[in-house]
Image (cartoon, rainbow, N blue to C red; front, side, top):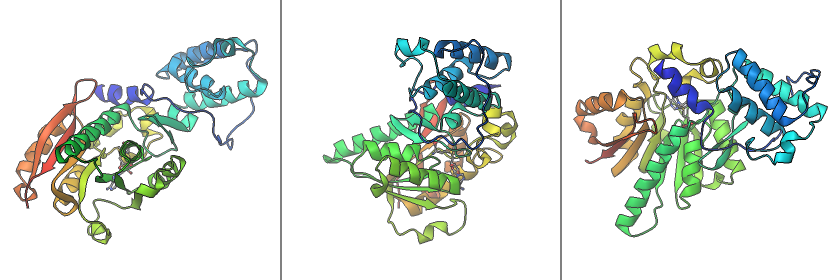
Length: 338
Ligand SMILES: C[S@@+](CC[C@H](N)C(=O)[O-])C[C@H]1O[C@@H](n2cnc3c(N)ncnc32)[C@H](O)[C@@H]1O
């Protein structure tokens, strides 16, 4: 059951907030009669909270608050002016809330229902089945930023690192690094076409497209890197698919029904993509370059012993960090050789 807690909780409780309504697709929208006797935002939130609880939908209150706030053009229910919470809603607003809530009853994640979500203060478009960025990944980004700041301090100039992200998904990691490191450039690769086009769209929405190269590429396919025109990079960062294959069945309905399994399934020991990234390091990484990975709590030990069995890679696991739940989830690996 630990996996449920790990994967489900972040679906709704990220520190980031999402933006207002933007071009919602009404393709599956069917009119429903407005709920008789319910007319204010507060009443609607209470109503849908009860319905979600009764139907076993997780995060019932947060779900209904986000949906009602979204329809009223706010990021969170708490940020709505008190007068707006008690004011009568229009029949169109009531119908829209009903439509979005029925999607939640089908266990669609709130991020897909709203169509956008915040990560590191950036509002990103979300489209199924592209992986929804989780709050713990913000900690990985912060660690990378610390490393860049330390290196810049050591050389006495602002950092202008060339960064490679493997498995960019919606672009959350790459775009937040670009926005916080104005001198940096990023190469973002993903094997999923939907991920590539969503990263491209998010880069354009955020005006970050000039410093990012977005490439459709499978890191495990032989020879894929030989066509890349760039020299070695300073940093590799990745939140790869790392769920152990046998754990895939335990994933919550929000995850296994809506998110791309390719974004999650890391093979028998969750190491399939991780080991490919590490094996490519001598070709991709500058001397003293670093790799930052988000992993499962069982991986620090597995990765450490795998690296010991591959001394020709000249890679050392130099630090492991815990996530906000106290589990070892982030690895810093450094290249220290020819
Ligand atoms: C866990 S998601 C992370 C997405 C994003 N970086 C984030 O943190 O929100 C893993 C991503 O890796 C991509 N991926 C899986 N296998 C890959 C491979 N062999 N080569 C390149 N990308 C891959 C998936 O398509 C998915 O977008």
